[in-house]
Length: 110
Image (cartoon, rainbow, N blue to C red; front, side, top):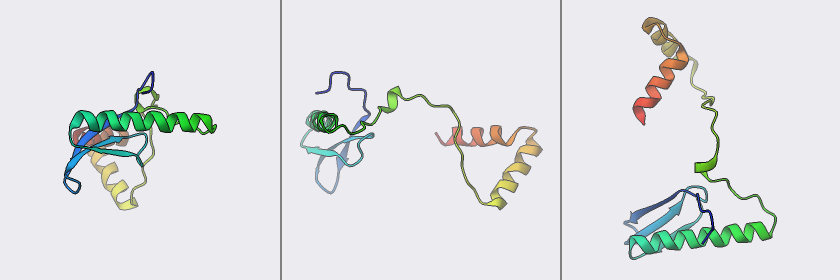
């Protein structure tokens, strides 16, 4: 296993495989099937450790764990001009910025 393993893991049930599926968000192409949740988690963690070791030995760039990344809080979204106008009007009528309106709407989704 990795010494400081800060990667994001998830275990879910796979209906197709009739087993638990271990996944790692930073390595979306990897997965591990097992009959119980603990084995699925241990399996994917071991697989990630082996892949990271292989990547290191080959001088490849290793994905940074989501948990340790720094986020600015800014991202750009492209939307149709009609929607942009509609949202700008909604923000204007609410007396808030378009940025605030978009942030409020996104926070309700989460």
